Amino acid sequence: MKTGVTCSVIWLFTLFCYSEASSFRCDYKYSSKAKGWFKHFVVPATWADARLRCTLEGAILASPLNANIEAEINKIMDTFFTSESEIFTGLHATLTGDFYTVEGVPLSEVSLVWAEEEPNNAGNEEHCVTFNGNGEAADRSCHETRPYICFRSANLKTEANECGTIDPEYKLDSRTNFCYKFHTVPRKFSRAHFACSAEGGHLAIINSAVEATVLKDLYAKYPDEKMIGNFRKYAALIGFFDWGERGDWRTIHGKSIDFFLYRRRISTRSNLKCEIMQKNLQGQRLALIFLCKAYRTVSTEALPVLAGVLLVDHQVQRRAMYYNVRPTLFASFLA
Image 1 (tube, rainbow, N blue to C red):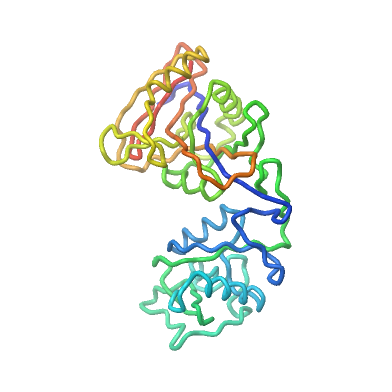
Image 2 (cartoon, rainbow, N blue to C red):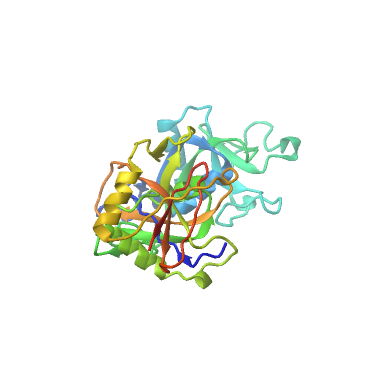
């Protein structure tokens, strides 16, 4: 439905931190021998999700490319994993059947010690390589879930910007003293939340009338022609959703909020006309653009963040409608 709406959306609490000792991310540890930053994840994920999270964090899924990197991987595994644990590496054959690391190094150039009877490509379904605490490799299904380690080489530019991140798409706005990034590639709610979290932030709500203006101005910089694809470009995701019970609206961190009081406060202070309209959609298949918000200051504590869908109507005489799915999306219209 064509609505004449330009969506201004979301803000999120994002927690980037950095110091003089680490010009990349504070949640990564630098190894002078391996000449790079490492971060381990104990919560298992599929290979695809592990690769994606590392990429969104500005790193890659680690592979034992040389003795120094392998030594650091072994050190991390000795400290945080059991000897029976297997982590995913960046070695995969998901594209052509030939194994390469995510940075394009062929398997033939990676020195590996294979576990007994490995590789065996059991069932012709093992297209990803794991590494265990004994320093042995094995081919495994990419769809299984395993821990993993992300790595960023010191050879890459790692100078953090004023937003505390190396991502140049985060821009500081002096009106709120927060940083924002506009994601023009649509994602479902869970994947948008995944992306913002990996970048160091969250999906979020507008916190004030000033911030509503900031995001409205940011949205105006991205007309439809700048967003490639056929999707709803007049709405974006923020972090409210229904926790499985009808009407149990909470933030992505489980905090309840009186959205109607919140809406009135924003409306009163900014003289904006707001209206909530809801309509059911089918499942969680709706993909929308979204914004991430980052703190400029150093912080290590996660703060509660809210989200939903915000629509900004720049044509007062026309009203926009948006929808409610699970995860549910709020629709607000600012005329």
